[in-house]
Image 1 (cartoon, rainbow, N blue to C red):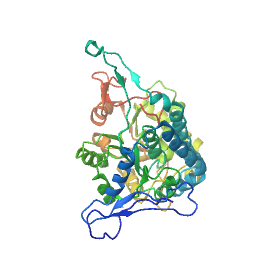
Image 2: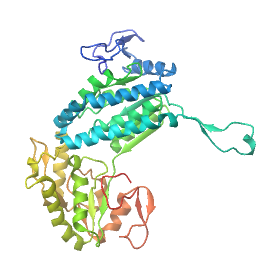
Image 3: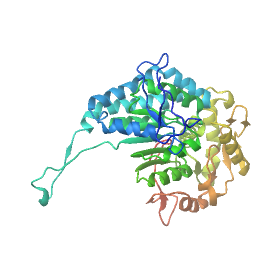
Image 4: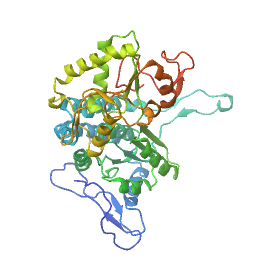
Length: 426
């Protein structure tokens, strides 16, 4: 079984010496005996050998044929099917994720992405012929999609399988070699990925690195041809700075703030059910979940009891005992979210249990609205009155200009809008 790649503890002298990493272990069908190598020199980067090994495999053209890409994608499908129970158990241990939520987000959505890729890959790989101008009439003009090379995928902890596997599917389909760095915070899921994923993929072209903050910093010192990062804005800046040194293109999927505007003439019960589902799915640990509600005082008085009713319908009279409610990931995140409850009045829920990392589904009044967009909200939606809307929209959102019905003068700044739904990318 191909082992996860970590920097060696003891570094022997001699610049340029390469130490093999990994090998076979019992029960790992399909593992390649001789795995990638890690540079273990005093003067070198501990991951340089691994990246060089993958780059040599990519330069050989091994990942380019359609048949190879399909074979590796089909192997991912076997990983999802054969390790389904292991994935459910690992996510339950990490964050108490209910089996339905784990299956839907970590397995089913990945299978859907995989099937769509398998069904369309041959078409995507074909040259796309385009129109020619006068100067190019004697030429052939077409778009050919070539792989970047060696890709680094850094995954977050909130959806620890989905958010590395979906980018990995795209990277394999495009013909790249890949280094996967799962989140070290989701320890059980990280262990599962490190031990099992390389049993299914070609270890000459794909590797899993288990690393904390310091090791990931060293990993980013290497030249990659593309970096896909999902996480916070603060870490995203570090990733982009490291990528800029090599002019490496990046995709940064960063967290944002998602206001939910509720108009005065909506179906209150329907809104309450949709908001409660989107907010408390995965215990609220979703970057596109509603962060706070914007509504009039009149709607606030109707919406609060409707939300209380929706929460009870979903999770019962005691949500802490519900099998359908997850837990906060890690003690640090728990303490951060608990501290937010002290900034105002809790209208619904708000109970905490540090041992279980449980924070009750809640509604929270009293944020300082001038700094609302700077708060990392995990639980507790703030309700703003109509008079506070304009400042929040202008200070807290980023993107293109779009007119919002709550504002009568200038349009509001927003990145995307979703109407009559939640937990959906705009």
